[in-house]
Length: 177
Ligand SMILES: Cc1cc2nc3c(=O)[nH]c(=O)nc-3n(C[C@H](O)[C@H](O)[C@H](O)COP(=O)(O)O)c2cc1C
Image: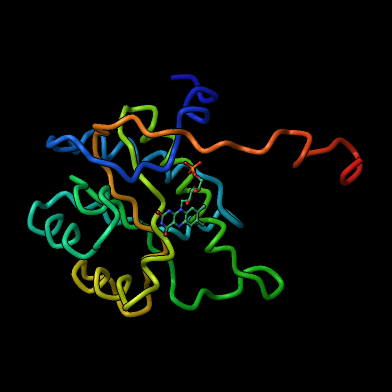
């Protein structure tokens, strides 16, 4: 799939997944796309735990009350950063941006291979979900799951979110002109 097709087809999927596993070879390809992402000072700060062990997957499925994709995912990718990232450039850390760049690459790879996912972030910060999952995945104390991606083969066709037109959000040479 052409990169522009993947960009156009990508969407946040919160629906039913087919009852089929995600082969490791595909999970590796998907995460490799994340490893290829740019990162501040090329520090490659984001690390990943790929969850495909059925027991762990079931445990994680059971944590979410409402998001069907989370409840039915056949694999998860946990994107991990430092809890307190060290400044690396004039007092700034780029770990959140590094992670976001890696996640977007992963979303596009997921789409290109015919799977679906949704960027889970807010929920991780409620009720210690990130800490609880991190513990189950043996994360060291200084690490935290910043983004969690439930992966599976989508069963439903879900409507694509409308994006604002180019003219409302982008301009040449001058802001809003
Ligand atoms: C930083 C960030 C955090 C997000 N957190 C969540 C989340 O916690 N739960 C969720 O269901 N979707 C989450 N999303 C997905 C957005 O809701 C989604 O991208 C947005 O509604 C646009 O829809 P689309 O991805 O289908 O274009 C998040 C997306 C981003 C970029």
